[in-house]
Length: 633
Image (tube, rainbow, N blue to C red; front, side, top):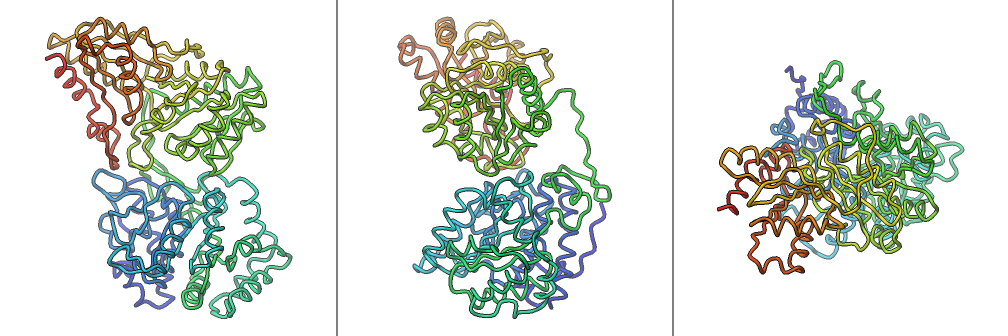
């Protein structure tokens, strides 16, 4: 594959190399950096649009500030590919998101230029404030020393409650802190809520080009004192009476809006802030996600996440599969029930495409709600919907549902409200690595009184579980399913309502029983095919439910076999722990039953293919077979 010609970028190994260039040359570096990002992601896949939107900002920040002494913290950090290229990692960029390669997010163990790891949103201002306070208290976090702390946060991320908590605290403390609001008018999905509308008004109601022309190349854009400079910047936008007021009321000096792609604005502005800021400052930069690469700019998601693609056309290679994705099965099943029951509604937190709810929104826009990056609010909103007589489906990735756990406990479970939790991306997810693994939801949900917890073994089972959730009005219910395609089983025309707390027998055997919870069932069946050739014929059962357990089936398996093995795609403390508690309570272990529980290991597993990650977790067919051989003697 032809690589872009990048004569100036080739001279940059670390950020200090940028300081040898003129401002005009820095603009060329940005152009070359954008080409390099497109080239890299075309070969590796990954997050494209977010990085393209901050190319100029990345170059300007590293050229003006003294990283890694100054701590540059990227919120979410899926926009960090340009940052990685400029910080000594360009030669490894084509290992991005692969086994033993670079992470797709910032990662402290990867580079001193990544002072704070991220992959979830709205954490950057809190972390940057922590660095600022540590600096002033004489803390020494590493051998780079203590300088400024700069948080770069998007308009979608700043709408979350945690970001406002940090802004409020930072304004109160008054520490020197720099927050750059990267306002690209879009998170993964179009941003929602009043905050997004407020930010849009800041530049849509006035002549942005006048501000751009007035500020171009002028350090005087920010005359001292800072508040006066911010006031003049705002007044340059005619008719914008409220610009920056919210942030200033929180104690920040507000500067902007500025064109985040114009180096002639960014460089003098950042230099002035570096030299003169004494307290918290917020720079409002307007950028465009996917900037400079037409296929990304014109895509509905601005090129958010891409597989490998052709640079000239932007087209991705289509995967060939005869099985639908689990996400699509959920979406189609929910649409089927929504057509029959007007009380069925759906809620997601800034992930309508990822959870399949974009299809629901097209069909039933008045019953579908994207609450933005606000999982806590989303869960309690669902609780209110349920209390009001609706049948809400709270569709979130497992890793993001963690952010709303207090609300699951306090607002849903204690009140026994029938919120239906559709938990996507359960188990190990591949290239996004440990930050996005759905490892903990079984453990943190199954310990809640009255909570029903299901896991689909295949796509047909998922369809049954959607139907079961629709019919369940006695309290909260959750069902989990993985990323990717199903197993190719025959699909029913409509889902069957399952009996709560009842599993199913897959095959009768002897000696050893394997009780599977979730999609490892296909690997269990492969393992048993191998074992039959050795004269070992285990029994296989699909638990379906972690809460409530199928007590009768489990006790019968224990009574009829010498050994019982549970397997699940979750951390210790989940399904296997509940089975062990039941067996202990019933005194089964007193009679010599061999019990083993196969769970995800007590480590965070780095990115790789899902198959390799499950190999690391010792949960593939060969390892399951080894476990059976062990207990069978």
